[in-house]
Length: 283
Image (tube, rainbow, N blue to C red):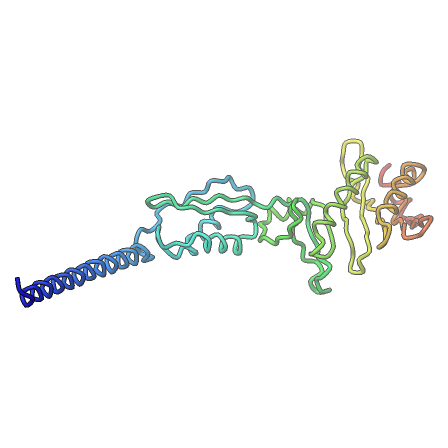
């Protein structure tokens, strides 16, 4: 075979190889385009819509109707297009009762929501509020988180009986921990807290009341306890020690106990006419 024929054969093979590569390129391009179009179709919000929203948790305070409404209004896609992280953020943002929430998809059309609610342990009043706002109460969870849900009339009555904690929002957890310790010690003396925390001057003050034998509150006999800014625990211990002695015998006569002194305290007493009225009411 001469050189001319060899050259023709080689040229033919090269041409065939080019066509084969071109056809392979077209096939691959077609597959990629089809895959992209298929994925794009899957992720269209109107395709594979959710037909069921399932709540795993039994809610105590968060209204399920409100949860359903917010969930539906926040659904921005179908099974493949919905971003569950975005939905979770919306639920946390728009429903203050929710502490934690997980959202997962179940094929083919179910959305499963699991919620952990805040459990309020006290009412909260922030000292950062202006004088005009200084009557707006929030709620404080047992983890020390401040939240502000919209309360029903029934919930307002329920939570109005809770202790009121006051202070700076960034110290809520510490204030809660300290007030819990105060409360435990007062219970040993048959006393209870109605208010606990710091005021706008960052000075600690409490309001306490005496419980009767049948565990009822004596609302007319709240006593204010001023502990100051420094040595707060020591001042509180001084009060409990003094109350355990003679002071408990005069509990009905006391308006305020000021323990902001280095080595003592002062007592503000009820006027005589009020004491006489109190005695006559009891008889």
